[in-house]
Amino acid sequence: MIAERFGVTPLMAFRYATGLTQAEVAELYNRKWPSDPPKTFKQVSYWECWQGPGSESSASARPPSYEDLVRLASLYRCLVDDLLLGPHRKLPLPPPEIGELLADVLLTVESDGYPGKADDATVITFDVPTGEGIVAVKLSRREFTELLAAGGLAALVPGAALAEPMTAADTARGATYYRHILNAHQAGHHLLPPAAHLSVLQRELHGIEKARQETPGVARQELRRIQSEYAEHISWLLRESADLNGCQQWANRATTWAMEAGDTSMAAYMMIRTASLALDRKDHTRAMDLTMAVRNASWTIPPVLRGIAQAYEARGHALTGTVAAAHLDEATELITTGRTETDPPYLRFFTGDFADMQRATCYVDAGQPGRAVTILQSRITTMPTSHRRDRAVYLTRLGAAHAAAQEPDAAAFAGLGALTDARRSASEHIMTELDHLADTLMRQWPKQPQVRHFHEELRTARHSQLSGSV
Figure 1 (cartoon, rainbow, N blue to C red):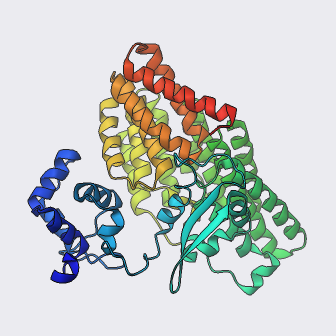
Figure 2 (figure 1 turned 60 degrees about the vertical axis):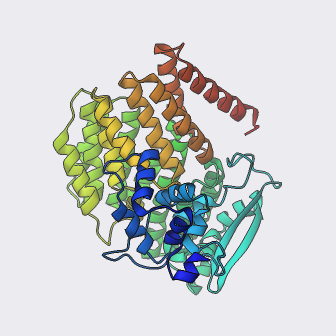
Figure 3 (figure 1 turned 90 degrees about the vertical axis):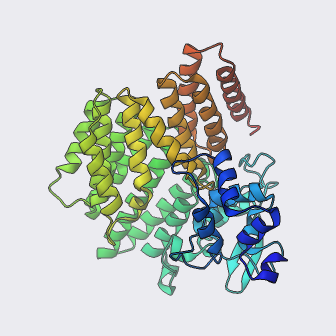
């Protein structure tokens, strides 16, 4: 083996095996996947000097992204695992990152990779890191659901990524126990359709209420706070199910419980949730009233939360035809640099990518879709392949931007890409947005072949959902 004989990394060894120079790899890469700035031989050199999983970056060594690894494997005609550990891979795979592990659990469930009917015949297979290696776990869909319900998923993935370790005191089903379960459901939200999570979380809420009745003082208040966190996630799951009335009802419940627990951040966050629902209905007045109320609240608001409110306020302005650039810039600054150790855990989902998405949406709503296309394309090309739901959201918005820019073929292509990922993530919310995109395209360009193809594929997917064959 070249890597062993010459003491080089697998990335370098596979390049040698194909007879390419670093400059030629960069040229082939740019030809197949053009980007700005383009890849150079220096970037290839950085990747090849990286010592593999578990090693750190340095001035001369930088790990490639998962997307880069997939593309290099395509160029070298090998597997991604070959580039990470060599073709023999005598050592077990290193413990995967939580996002990669959870995203890949259902990849082999059915032939098209889409999590379908929840029956016992469906087998879920994934690797679980242990202290001494990797063990394979095979579960039926029902067993997996039960494991998730019991918080057992947290025991199978790196604990620090989900919650604090369980303690003996948690056997009484205290606050840590219930938060442990919620964190597992949040981290694995895309593994099962929203309905599967909803049934478990609502059942756990009854358990929390029973525990509250038997708990005095401060601990009782903390359980109320946890109930508000459960209600928030249930609200989000209902939005993913396209049940906007249910989403609002649970947001209201989360607000009430948060105020009872003295959790003003959660109460403000649910005001922002209501604002996002108003934006879905194109009610810019209601959305802006709510976001300004959050920003002007008399209590302390975490900077990231204030940034989210600022972004949604800019969305409201965009619906009137104005791009509030200053609002968007401030929102990005607060979201990307305003994090503190005391931030509520649900704010971890709001990153610079979220800020860019809101900026792009503002450009579309304000009638400047070309600028939105630029932002969205750059984000999609750098997004990890495991982030299927996020990619579906970005592609759907990209389709809307192309449609607004009078580019029907590009819009249909984006819609087709979003459809695949939306089905895998079981997001009815994204599917509904795709319905709107298809309606727009068919209304304006009904004879365009690519438009008709997208429309037919979406119709087929919808029919499969109704017939229960997906």
